Length: 144
Image (cartoon, rainbow, N blue to C red; front, side, top):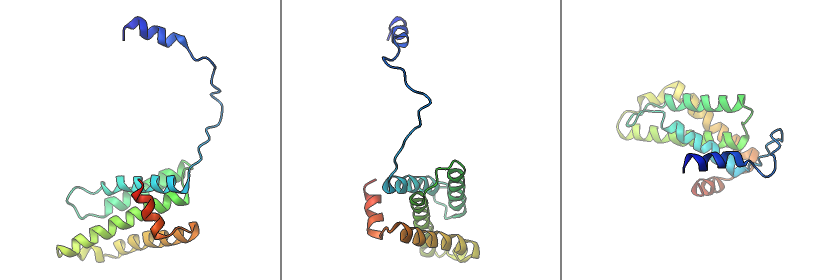
């Protein structure tokens, strides 16, 4: 694009002025919020170095994401269900791999047990509160 064509494009302006003070209305769904949380959880799964069985970076990341979303007033129960569900799956996967390698000692630690237990309890509480079944969760994840 030539400079003259670009300048003409910039000076053309819109046909009608936008109301820049109008509220932004977004209507998230349970599915979209669950998937948003699960996606954030996916980012947290990558917080632990490749090949590492260190679960603490994952837990720290989840805590940070929930904190940021809460402060920004964007936290919803479906979002929390998504991130805690994903985090719980990650924690259990890391534990199973460690068990298979004979390195399960750190997963018997009380801190791991507390964090993992919290994720499981929150998932159960949120599934009950939102009346979402395990089959519905799997369906949402497959639709991603």
